[in-house]
Length: 256
Length: 266
Image (cartoon, rainbow over all chains, first blue to last red; front, side):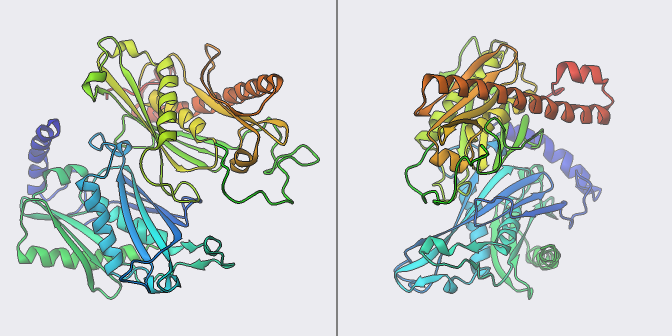
């Protein structure tokens, strides 16, 4: 419960600053934190990236193994996304089976890349109905200072860039690149005192009333959304976040 | 450790060649390149990153803090609780996430090794939590983890008798070598991970598996200890780099930093 006391104190501080149009770290309301992307960070993975978004740090590793397709999708590879909020990343994370926070992160990242057709799963079939490629997108959170959704989404997209399907795993001689189609980039904003702030820090997340994640693809279309927390958004606020997501998504996409 | 499965070593590959060199060109007593960085994470009270050959390992320390579960609390001492974990993508075949018997065991022996050097009596009833994350594995991850954890503890300002330095020795193609890489671990004949405290000349972690004559074991242990001394120097350098940079930032006299090597105010 200790964290709630801190949150009350922080809320005051953050609110007073916001009233003056300032965020605690000096950013504009629509400004992302510095973004650093290292592609191919993990050699043992088929694809990987480390993303540092301010002080938030995540590593995404892609593993691709041969397996059986789901009975209802014999002509499609399988995409599985998993997020681990390991205790290293924050004093509030505990080890053990995934809790609802990490499940939400995994599902929102998964929804973005699945619905945005980041990867053409129909090209990941070895033998229809019998054998397909199963792609694991594993999100490992190393340092937690807010906005895991976007850090993980960016890392996943970056990891796809150079990911390889290792043919030797199915007795095939040749490796093939991952059939990447789109880059669905998500943007998360929170509402504090009626103001919309993108890319919230941990402190901002703790005092936020509501949160909205919007993912877009290259042509500006939307492919996934997730609203979180107890508060509400007006229609205008939602469309504002959508506009921000389209604009900032294009900027991020141009980075890799 | 040595796995039975996996692809066999190609016939044309020799673990030790005519010139006594190993697969990656090293001599028997030569370690892989080791790079250590202290203070890499923001949230943790202390942290360290170790890149050792093709291993990438991160360690974080939280505490001293309230001990969970409470029945483990010791009214006289702090509890050093280490959790060793491998990322699912750290190995060739995806590892199922979460703890297994191997990681439980490694967590336990690393906790014990670290407890030896921490002044636990200064923090009764608390827990000092150490998290080791293996991001990329290429044999020797427990040694890399223990090495990183020691630096992270020092970075967190935990009072310690000394750092624990760690390195393994082993036997490949009937030759005693240090710091086995993956192929040597898989196709070698023995593995001896060692944790060493240079100031007291004591061994705080020791395991062995495989087949060794007593002479080979003695030679391996001594080679591992010599390697640990090199690791120790690199650990110290990492801490000095971190705190001399900090001193320059904050105008702390270097003597204080050098003497204490502690983080001020948690």
